[in-house]
Each structure stands twice: as structure tokens, then as C-alpha cells.
Length: 220
Image (tube, rainbow, N blue to C red; front, side):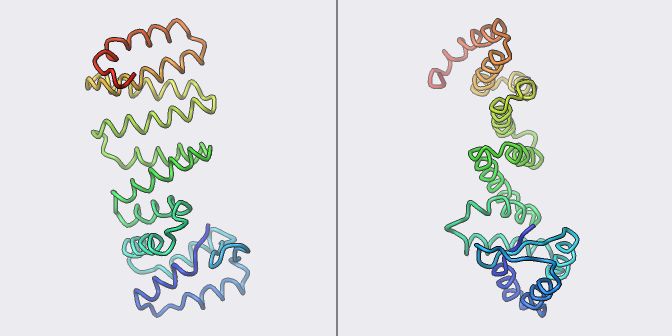
């Protein structure tokens, strides 16, 4: 776990806190409980989770929702040129602050960035967190996120998991007659069945796409 001295100093100043962040950091350093990053200014790491929790409760013992929202805003204002390095931190801060819109915004950015960097485990974790937060009746978003998860499973060779995800959202799309989503899901399903060696079933599914493709020619 990590923290930036600058962020804590700005919070201390904005809240007119009587707690000295610099004194606490110096004490933690003297007791060999944290260490400073050798290449990034003001970046520190806790050596133990318990130390982090004690320091967190000491420095940020006021209203956590306010502090986390403030932390997110400080990051956005002071780290604009490297904001991509803070996507997940921002998602966490806004999540604790109860700001759903910004939580989902930064979870989306975190997920897509992890996927692009082939950090597949993290990407799936972030996408699943989004599924926990969005409304279950937001079917387009639910299906879209699951399609991204299925794509990752396909890329890493987890074809059965990919198939199961696709079947689940296929049932949803069929039930609600979501034509565009059915085209996307069936196309992905046909591809994964080919990878699984189930060629006859794959051709059957892809052939069944023709009526839908005729209805929506721009999706071909």
C-alpha cells in the first residue's frame, strides 16, 4: 500500500487539521514502518498492512467520505499529466465517498487500461466490481461489461469460462429482444465455439445471425 505526502499535506491544509502529517511521516520513517520510493517524489510505501491501518485511522480519523472525496479531487487537480496512474486509486476514493458516477468512470478507465496492458486478473476484478455497482436493470451496460470479461477469458484460453459468461448474457438479450446485443453475443459465441472445436454448433449459431444482420446491416 502506498500514499503521497503531497496529498496528505493538502488535505491537512484544507481541513485546518491540528495533526501534523510531516511529524507522523517522520515518526513512521524513524521507526522503520514506511519507506520512500527512490524514483518518485513524495511517494511512500507501508511495510505492513497493520501500520497502514493505524496511520490511516490517525491521519484520516474525521469523516472518511469527505476526506476520500477531497483526496480524489486533489489527485485530479495535481496529477493531471499522469492521471492514468491513479485511475484505480480515484475509483476507490470516489467509491468510499459515495460518488457512484465518478466511481464507475474511473473503474471503466482502470479496467480498460488493465486490459490493454494484459493485466487480465486485475481487469476482470475491476469489471466485476462495476457489475456490483451498476443497476441490474441497466441491461446494455451489464451486457457490455460481460462481453469485455468474455473477451479476456478468450484471450487467456479460459474458453469454458468465456462460454459460460456469453450464455448468461445471451439469455438476458433473448428475453428482452435486444437485437444489436444478440448480434454481438452470438458472434462472440460462434468464435469461442470454434476455438473449443465445436465447429458444427459454431456454424449453426453464426448462420442464425443472418436475419439479425439483415435488420442491422451496419453491425456486419
